[in-house]
Amino acid sequence: MSDIPRRLTESVVYRARDRCEYCGLSQCGQEATFHVDHVVPRAANGPTTVENLALACVSCSLRKGMKQELTDPETGEAVSFFNPRIERWSDHFRWDEERVVPLTPTGRATVAALALNRAVILSIRREEAERGRHPPG
Image (cartoon, rainbow, N blue to C red; front, side):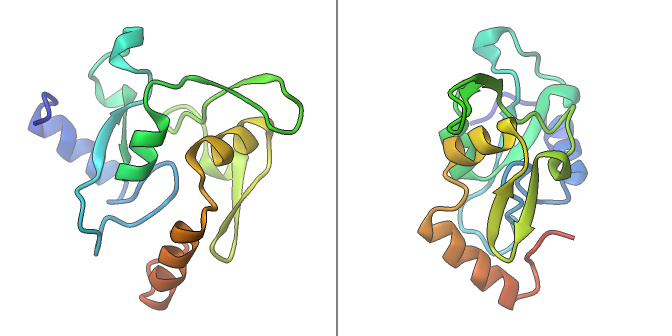
């Protein structure tokens, strides 16, 4: 059970247009309810405020966990995890049909950490495209 107040949860879901703010998956048609995720984890003193919350599908939420810093798989350098509250998705990623194409070191590291192009999510995105729910508009 979440300890996030209902009004905050509703604000986060509305702002995200009912989509995961990391991978873009629509909550519509998914069996599992998406998580309201602390971008900066509570364990790192991240506040429970609308400015620090993001809607995340279960897969992205569990893979993200408490991560804030990642390693760019191309350079080996430390980079920040993508932060949907202060960064635009399109600055770090673009769509190539159902694949997420990283554009920056943060993009590469986030794609790797969240496994955004694993076979099962590509299949889900193809099905979502057939239903008119992918790519996110």
